[in-house]
Amino acid sequence: MIPSTIRNFIEIFSRLPGIGPRAATRLAFYLTELPTHTKEELARAFTNLDSVDLCPTCKLIKDGAQASCAICKNPTRNKNVIALIEKPTDLLTIEKSGHHKGTYMILGETPQRGMVSELQKKRLEELKARIQNLPEKKATELIVAVGPNTLGDLLYEHIAREFGDYTQAITRLGRGIPTGGEIEFTDPETLRDALQRRL
Ligand SMILES: [Zn+2]
Image (cartoon, rainbow, N blue to C red):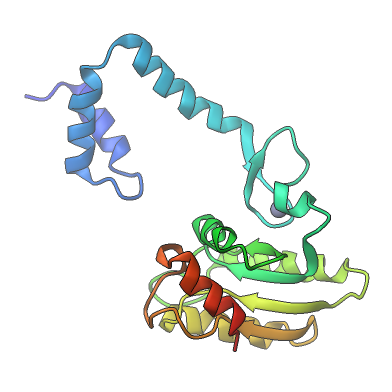
């Protein structure tokens, strides 16, 4: 009953985060009715993403033409204080709070089954190399900015075990973030308090 073009669209779009088969179906019908030039504009927005890649230092997305992201490039940001976060959206929320003057390392999300992922291990190795390139060969502080939940605890403990020789201090975000809460959805004021009251 549904043409194969639409079925194919639904199949592909259902794989995207936050979009299930129902939303993909609705999207397919909606897009079908749009004028060709609007569809072309959307398609261009997708292909243009190809020109974006990851900052080699912190793994935030950056413009392909730039060597590093705006934060790593900024000489006023403290390279010795590094916030370790799971997702780029966590970084955006922390930036909005305006209370982190250091830099970042995006590690990727901790898998639900509760172990440090291969990507996280790889990024942590890269972080060690990055720290060894600092003038002091040691960071001043690593702020493990993960949610106060079981998976966050797991990642924090792993980092605390691995980075003792690489930093003067390892801290976690302080009180304020509800237990089980997520950084991404924390309002800037709460996050500011948590950044100020690190553990
Ligand atoms: Zn960067």
